[in-house]
Length: 67
Image (cartoon, rainbow, N blue to C red; front, side, top):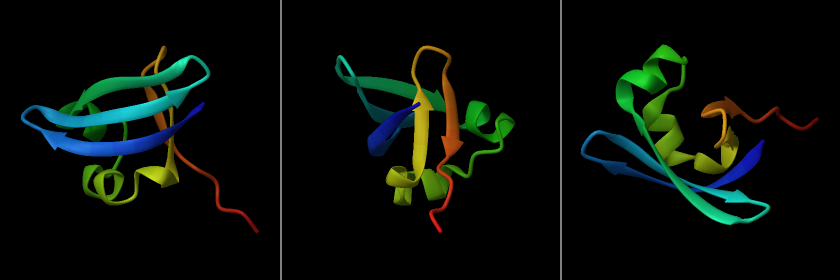
């Protein structure tokens, strides 16, 4: 899973910039897709650093808390 470095709202959903081993990659996730996966879109926009993404599999998950 790769680090999400930026999230911004676009017309159809959220544009994520993901830091991969090969550089940065942009992906758009539609709001309906995020809802289906149980992802809080507003929280993702406000705190993208708290999430990880696998761009190949199009998976987003919340980071585990430390401690």
